[in-house]
Image (cartoon, rainbow, N blue to C red; front, top):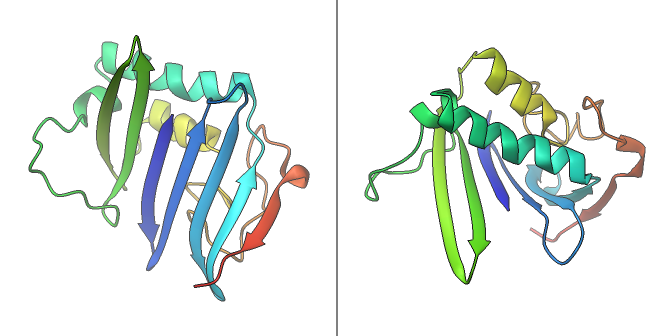
Length: 153
């Protein structure tokens, strides 16, 4: 599972991308003009693998994820200033979490490509989960299949 949190312009956004229960899904929650919104986005096995493998390659290759790994359990999480990403893996009954706080201004090309691969409504770089942009083009995704539900605030 990959959990993504970020806020832009006072608009918090959370995405949960999972490969549990034999399928893949991306569930997004964000603040819209009319309150809290949720949106399910299509996610393929290949799309999830690209994101998961991107984290692993960055850690082992000394990239952004390796530099931004949170190792201090007392460090405050700040989704206003960072892209906060948590990768959770369950293996042999053990749960392993790794949290990364990548500066919102990060321009590393490999990280920018990773952000572009997220199925964020509106796109992670163009304004994470901004309601007026939800459903806008996101590279490699079938946005027409996205479904939206309003959740009472």
